[in-house]
Image (tube, rainbow, N blue to C red; front, side, top):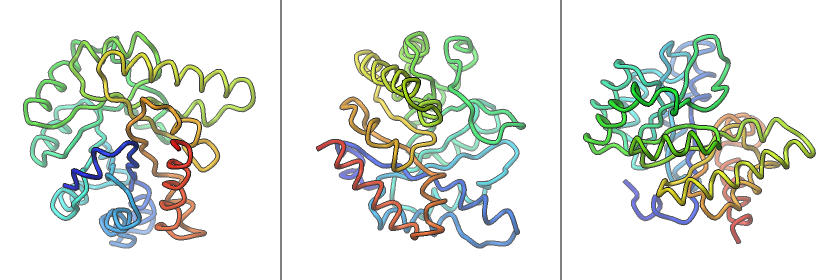
Length: 248
């Protein structure tokens, strides 16, 4: 693991799910998500994120096995709170596991996890992962009730859902950005490490990257899509440049 990169001021986690989406559209082995992860590291990524869904629509079990074995960067395994996914996480022991809501019919993750409403169920997942030395992240909306619940459960990290902010425009976007900013401040005051992600692109990343409490951004779909036009390494380097510019 690249500890020096991991403990930097603002980290970039690159989600490689949609490299696997393209591969699975035709079958076979190309393009290879592990190759993408290695390329991401060379381009300046600090970590790799992969979501192993129940329906295996993109990342596969074999991908997770290879990522755990072949990459040097910290691996963040996104997963639903199910016994199947817990067993996989405990077997591979990624650097971190991010618990996310998951519905088969959704195209992508549509909102944050209802931690406050599911504390009794989530408690055993958080405890089992932490006992195995895996950092636990909860993907949530920037809501004080959810942040309080995450801290109560003993999560190490919360990842604030930025999808709504990215989808909105004008005053509505500004209001959502303010909500994210306050959520980041409040979560940090509870001792939670603050991450953010979902839907971020070149136009939206700088405002979120500017939050001093945010330690990591996880970005994937945009980087993979932009790679079609400019190359994966170029899209990652440009995202990194914008993040640094926002923090400076």
